[in-house]
Each structure stands twice: as structure tokens, then as C-alpha cells.
Image: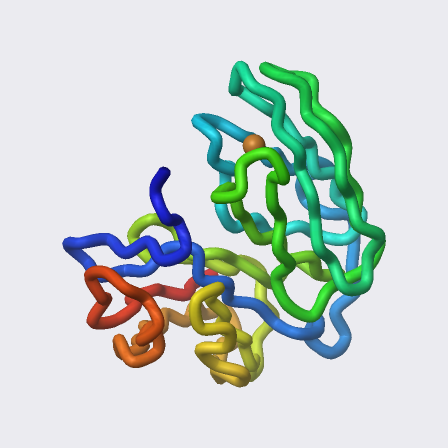
Length: 202
Ligand SMILES: [Cu+2]
């Protein structure tokens, strides 16, 4: 089974599954209903899909399975109630998982039947979060103008940045490139990335 704990695009050196988010909603921001009432968390080939999932408080996580074997989705939150439930083979209707509180950092999700199966859920009470794709890219939409400080977090290293500052001009976009040297991933045994390349826009 592939180790998904550090996924690097060999061409761009972009790193997947890096979470970029605001610890708190910007001042004056009023949380409305999440844009999507539901997000899907699937299991296929004994892997969680996606590996990194952003969830807003109040959003329903629909846990599905596309595998012929049963899985057990087991969450390890700090502030929310834990969820530990068997998902039947090929369950395309799914089991509903709901978080009621924001967490400070992404939480671990495991399958007790397949010890290599691991994923991370980031649960916040606002929508200003993203996780990098296979190219190391991400986008956070709808940020108000002003200065924002982002947490940048990856499961191998933990914090890559605690306060990555980005200024969004009125009516404008911001594009940033975040780079982290391989020393951040020194504990990783395998081909090491030279940098993470991600972009930020709105
Ligand atoms: Cu499993």
C-alpha cells in the first residue's frame, strides 16, 4: 500500500495535502450557511478519498465506500465527539458524520481494519481554508480585503507556518508561492522534495 504521508509531484515538486487556513474568521465576517450542505469522504482501494478534507461546522460529511470489504471510519478529534463506525462494503448511500465544533488543527482519521488507511479532516467555523492538490496548488475564495495570517500545516511536519501573512487589496487577488525546504521533512525516508509550491488566489 502506498505511503500517503508525503505526496510530492515529481515535476513541480508541489506537495499535496498541505492545509492552509485562517485560525479565526476575519473580523466582521458573519458565518452564513456553508456553500455546500454536504462533502463526500470516500474509500476506494483501501484508501481514504480525499486524503485531506476541509469541513465547515454544520456541513454533513457523507462517508462512503467503493470497496468490496468493510471499513471502519474512526476519527480522533480533540473538541468534537469521536466517530467510530463500520462502513458496509460498497455503501454508496453512506453514513452521515457531523462535526459541531471547530478544531485547532487537522484531526486524524483512521480505519481500524486497515492500519495504513489514514486521512485528515480540518473542521473550522468559517470557509477560509484549503488543502493543496496533487500539484501543490490551492485556492481560498472570498477573502475580504486586508491582511490575513494563515496557518500552513502538513502531517509530516506539523506547522510549516504559524502566521503566513498575505495582504488582499480591495477588489484584487493575491497570489503567493510558499516554499519549504526539505529539512522540514527530514524524518521522511524516501525521495525528498526541494520545495512546496502552492498558489493563493480568490
Ligand atoms: Cu479499511
